[in-house]
Length: 154
Ligand code: RBF
Picture 1 (tube, rainbow, N blue to C red):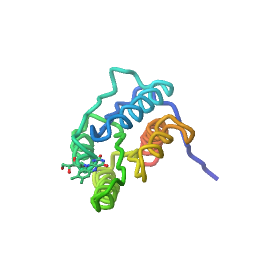
Picture 2 (picture 1 turned 60 degrees about the vertical axis):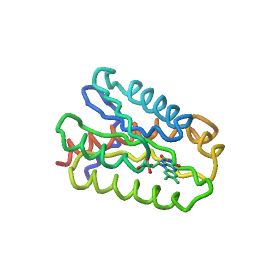
Picture 3 (picture 1 turned 180 degrees about the horizontal axis):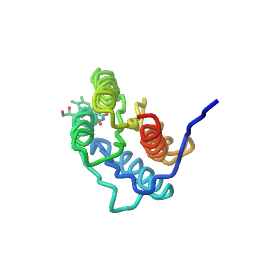
Picture 4 (picture 1 turned 90 degrees about the vertical axis):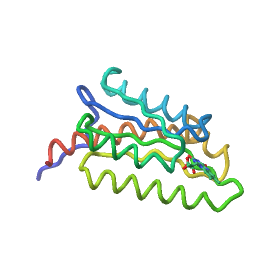
C-alpha cells in the first residue's frame, strides 16, 4: 500500500494570501495566523505575497487571478463574514465558498479556505486566535499540504 501525506514542509513554496479588509479586526488576526503558520513550516517571507480585497465577496476573484498567474504554488483565502442584520450574509458566505472551490478546481492550484462565517464578532474572534484556534493558521497548513500532494500526485 502506498500512502502520501499530509506533508508540512513548506520550504521553497510560493504562497499568495488573499485577505478581505471587511471586518479587518478579525481578518488581520487570520492573516497573522496564516503568516505564522507559513513561517513555522519553512515558507520564506520573500515567497509570501499578501493581497487585500475589499470584502469576502471579492476574495474568489483575487484567488483565481493569483492561481492563474503561475507565480504561486498555493493560495490561502481569508475573510470574515458576520451575520449582522441583513440577508446578505448567506449570499456572501455561499458565494465565497463556491467561488474559492471553483478557483482551485479550475486552475489546479490549491486554494485553502479560511473564510469564517459566524453569527457575531465574538464567534469570529474565537476562531481567529481565540479558544477555537486560528483558522488562518489552519488554512496555511492546508495550503502547504495540498501543494505537496499535488506535486506527488500530478
Ligand atoms: N464582506 C465581508 O467580508 N464580511 C461581511 O460580513 C460583509 N458583510 C456585508 C454586508 C452587506 C450588507 C454588504 C452590502 C456587504 C458586505 N460585505 C462583507 C462586503 C462584500 O464582501 C463586498 O466587499 C461588497 O459587497 C462590495 O462588493
